[in-house]
Image (cartoon, rainbow, N blue to C red; front, side, top):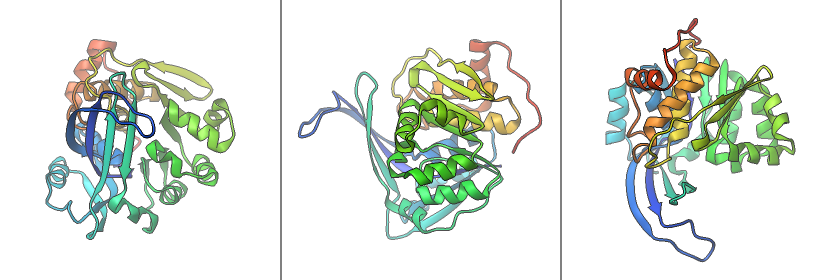
Length: 299
């Protein structure tokens, strides 16, 4: 079982003419309302790839019986939810410019419960965007632990990051978040990578880098038409975690993550284009040749 900790949210994805500066405006060219939340996106991706997954999240009184709730149940996701009946489920407002740059505003809503609830002990967990104090607890008392600060990075103080980095097995973030963590910690990118047993740095359309045991592996992005980059990083994580838990090597798991992400950018929405395992394998073999074998399961 793979556990994922973090937000469940409703996404308002807007394509805009440009990202304006202060006291300026831009035109919204189109808008899509979709299922989202970093942790929920990853959990849905894992479930569609055939993995067993538990989602530790927070939702409002509007969630039970909703289309999102029913979809998760249909996928067999184990919902371990904190519920705030008086609040609504978290909401993200994402704005994407033609060149692919993004700006996001996130309303926590029911996710404020992460600040007060007790964290569980988990054998195999990925910590996505969530409250820093909650993720510190998860990191300190879990088995295999993966951490992604995501767009909540601004909430993490230096002591949060130090504690989490000392406890995790995998750090996965994009190049902007790596730079932000280095600034908060006052260290170089190389020093940050050396603090953890395994690190993955995603770079959007330029692919990703895997750092493990003082070795560096470049992971290519697949050349597919990009309709909307929103959710590609979450899809990469879903593919990687599903494969790594099955016993695939870290490098092959990264390639599986890259293939999974390639489906998401072809559509609008974080979960719309997510593939099942067989569909992912077909594209993997088209791009990289024979599909690899795996070792003993890790989760």
